[in-house]
Image (tube, rainbow, N blue to C red):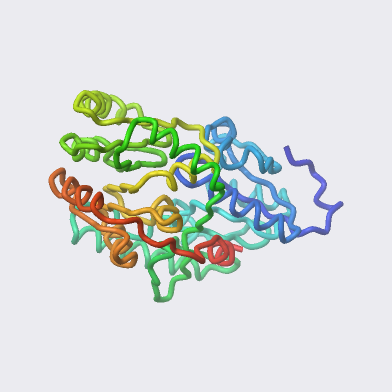
Length: 359
């Protein structure tokens, strides 16, 4: 817990705010903690007890051991953040998941200590209806641009590092790091090879309904000589639906290798690097860190659903294919991928642009 020693240090003080451990949120915190430490800044992470006790905390921040200030979830409204920043004498307050603060910032501005740096994770509309999605996306971007004009507010919007987005907004490329060694990858691949000679696809991360794992399993039910590696956490509702499908898959000769959370960054990255093909079938729009990690490690990609994934497939060229979020289309894309060689690694994808935008 931080002490009230702000008058005893001349180091620039950064307050990083993240109450939600789900998805990539705490990974972004880790990237920022490492960057600010290398700059000689003093850092406090403002979060909840649920986040600190989560598997994601162990994965991303367990070894980093940052200074932590705990608050209950209701304490993360904008006025409470302003009080926390002032109490900590923060020169900079960074919120890596700032979408919900856009309207309050537009109305009231920032009255806390120092500057506020806010990251908008979902600038594109989240709707299955194309027209409504475009309207929501345009409204969200306009709101982000206007809120970013407030004094002492720096507002950035997350983008895929594969897409060069322009316009008046400040775009922050999704950070890409690979923390595994060749030995880490080899160990997991040897585990997969113990099931016999087969083609391995992988589904990764916090697997909610929006990642369509049951659809992926349905798509490979009739595909011979294939296995599926699932690495990460699976929501209870998804597990109930996918359990019987996985049983049918194994009865038909398929193989399943499950690496449950918590996973270290090295284990997670090695799992991505060990499969033959990474499958991302998303209902929601937005950058995917798993897709970029797979591209950086030279894995083939089958992408489906979200238009943001379709853009990624276009920018990745021959290493990725995109299909509609339908069983037959996804099955055809996976069958096609099985006939193709491994692509080349994509180099020079790192966290520097992400850090520069927020810091």
